[in-house]
Structure formats: structure tokens, C-alpha cells
Length: 581
Image 1 (tube, rainbow, N blue to C red):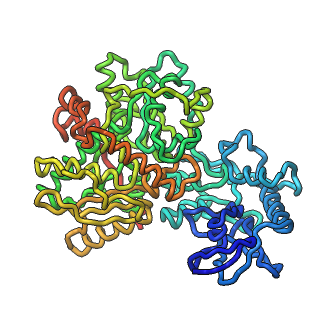
Image 2: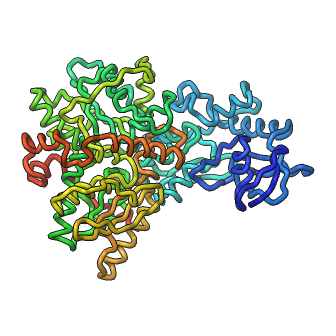
Image 3: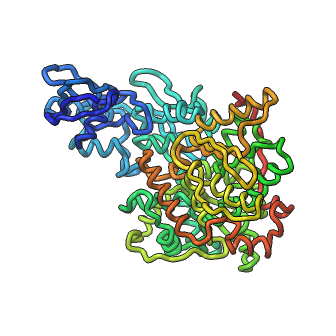
């Protein structure tokens, strides 16, 4: 432990702690702009400068380890003036477009300018003439608003190992761009949105489609249906003063009806349906076609994009099940349309997702038009939904609670944990155990696949069998698992796993690229806790015991893995070997 003083306050911190971390221990807030808890320090912005007592030299608190006996000054008139000047210099090459920016009132640069009382331009303004890039229709890149903090580049290159973003030019002309200065859609980008989730300004933002949804809600000839993903319910409340992880499911149902949606469904129903199909798929491979193992499961379109680009040799191992919201979309325009005697061409399905990649997924394959129409018409992020609720003048915290429409809205506890890393695996194992043994688990909680460890490996007893599993989240961690499988195949060895779950975003969907800003591991855990609590409170905790799923198979789909099921609920993949590593 290191002994030191900060602003005269004595403290002890572990060796290796930075000055910034030490200050937090004694409730001293040093301003930062480039530093994020998920990322190592880059010292790019210079706002976190501090002084040592008796010395004029200024140190950057985010990257300087605290040493024995240090006496640190974090705030004095000189330090405050230097910080103000740094912020003013950043603002000199940042457009004054706050009112029209999607990050208005939720921008870290804007907040710092307010904290330091900056209300006039102190330096001549220099703005680069660089157009916005909205080529992906999932994310919008606005280099003019970039402050060169480096967060997005580090996330893309190190955390996700995608390398779609990099710095171009030098000095005053430094800017973010896909390598080679190409459009984002032509880069290796997988649309995960982690760059936008970590950007402190509006330089990277989700492709906003709220205006399009408002138009459709006002069209009397359209029948608008909405569904909400598992992770949305434990995150959207953060925009309205709720704690991270607060479950706002039934308030969301009420808000969406007030906004004008004619039917309110739940993607958790689709998660239950996915598990029934996926568990059958796994059991079939495990018992009859072991050479086709491991089975890789995920509801993540960013991972699908990543797999097709960098791991096309894994296509045969990937579950053919569509993501849950695509299943609900297809059934909305077939099963629900038939039951309600609706013209499917007039049905509009809107998905509320924690994800920016879902915007790309809904139009990516012909299988996503299995109903004869585009199964999901629009995908909004949690952030877009929060803005719409505010625009509608809905007092969300005081809203009475309501239920979903039962036909495609009821879900089991297993369906809701899809939103957390390990949740898909856990839900699938609950049902697979039943299918393999014909009996129920005494304890349905698989604790060894939970938590934020980047890679979780283990062996799960399923009756007389042992199932070797791996769970990975964050694409760099996913690569570690897949490389082990690839190496085994290359050397004609038995793969080290039977069942693998992967998620592109750290923490899974609770940490998705479209979730409320300010995500950290603490926030991811709180959101996950909210989902596990929802699971525990459900009487039914197995996907295959959802009575409305059973009814759906009996009335419409027939048996799991049937031809009709494959047409509506399964998909295919397209390897893109030009990206192969």
C-alpha cells in the first residue's frame, strides 16, 4: 500500500494506482475527457493535470502512478486556468452545433464547458470541412465533432480487434476515419456501436430513425407493432432517474401504447422460442452428429458480421436460429396477422434494441423477409426510445404499469436473461437438460457461466453426460475461444468445447452499443442483476414451458426444426473470405 496526501487529505492506496484513482478514494473529482473506466489511459486531452507540492511541473493524473509520500494538489487557480484553456482550445475546432446535435445535454465536452463557465469563444475557430459518413445506416461518423481523445480507436482496435477506425493526418489536422479514408460501410466495421457508446461527444452516433417511426405511428393505414429486447428494460430507466438495473418492463409497455403502437410484444418471447429451437439443434448434434460440434450460439448480429468476415470457417458450427426479435417480426406478419385477420403488408414492426447492429441485421438477408415482407421494419436503440418517450410528453417514472399483448408477449425467466453475457447459454442448458434427461434441474441457476470475466470455460453435467462450454464477450475475447477451436480442427483434434456462447459487446446486450451512455463494469453488473431478478421472480423459468410458445407450435408451427419452422425462424450465412485473418 502507498501512503500519500491529496489536497492535504492522507490516504493509502494499492501500489500501481494512478493519481486519478487515488483522488476518487477521497471524493475528489479530477476532470477528464479522454479517460474512460473501460480503457487504459492515453493522456490525450491534458485536462486532468495536477501538481506536486513544492514543484511547478504538472502531471497527468490519469496515467501517473501515485508514489510513496507524494503530496498532490488537484485544484488551485493556476490548474483551473490551464484546464479552462485546454477546453477552450478543444472548442476552437469543435462546431457550435449543440442544439442540433444528438448528444445535446448528454455530452461530456458540453458538460465540462458548463462546469468551467465557458460561455464565449476565446480562440479563433477552425473547423475542418469533412462530411458526415452515414453509409452503414447503423452509425453516423461526424469527424468534425471529434476531439481526438482516442477512445473509439482504442475500443475498435484493442477491445474489439476489428480495426475499422484509426487516426488519419497529424497535429491540428488529426481526425478519425476508417483506414484508407474509405467509407465506414466498406471497412471491416461490424456495427457493434461500442465506438459510439464510448465517444464523449457526438462524433459517432446511432443512425436516428425516430422521425420515421413518428410518421408511421401517425399513418392510419399502418398497424404498428413494437417489441422490446431483454436488456432495454433494465437500462432505459437511467434516462429518467432510475438506478441502473431497475426493471421498467411494464412501464415500457404502457409508454409504448401511449405513443400509439397498436400491439406491444416482448422480444423475450422470441428468446424463449430461440431456446426451444437451439436446444433441439444442440441435442441433435450432441447425441447424433458430434462431428458438427461445437455449436456456437448468439443473438448478436455484430458477431454474425464478425464471423462472416474473419471466421468463415466457423459457419457450419454456428446455430442457424435467427435472433429473437427477427423471430417475433416474422410471426407478427404471419401467425399474429392470421389470428387478427390483418393484412401483413400494412403491419409495421418496430424493435427496441440495445444494439446498433440490429439496424443492419433487419435487411441483411432474404431470410429476414420470411413472412413475404421485411419481417422487422425499423430497429431503434434504447437511446432513441428514451428520446421518443420524452418527445411524447410521457411522465415515465409515474406511469401506471401495464402488461404486454400475450400472444407474442409472455416470457419465461430464461427468456429475460438473454440480455447478459452467459444468459443465452444458461437458458439453453436449462432446456437441453430436460430434452436429454427427460427430467428437471433441481437448481436452474448456472453460476459458472455468469459474471464479467472475458472468457468463462467449464464443464456442465447434463444427466450422465458432461458438456464442455465456453462463454465469451467482447470480440477480442471471442477470438481467443474461436482460435482454440480452429487450432484443434487444424490438427485433427477434438474441439475443446461442445457449446459456445459469444457476444460482441462487453457484458453482452446490457452493455450494447445503443444503451444509455456512461457504461462501466459496475453499470453492466447492475443491469445484469436486474435481469437475474426478473428471472427469479418468474414462476416459469424454462423456455420450453412457456404456454404461449407451446400454443404457437400446436396451432401454427408444428414440431421444432420442421420445414415451416426453418423457413420462418432460421437463417443462413455468407462467408466473406476477403476479410479472413
